[in-house]
Length: 94
Image (cartoon, rainbow, N blue to C red; front, top):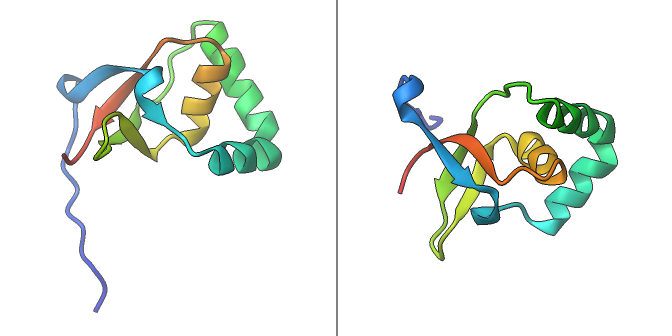
């Protein structure tokens, strides 16, 4: 039998702003995403630079501090490349 996962409904009150300095994306993942999806990341970067809203990312606290990305690696990379300081997120677990 497979694992069953319950989803918790989220709303705006679940949103936090997290410093991108605290969001960890392994270099191997960063390189793979830029190699495979450079166009998508570039478009997202342009959206950040133009001030367009983006879908919140989902983060999970890391044991050693900071956050791992559960959903939204492309958006995190685009935000970092655009020079953003913070990202809108939902933090799960921890």
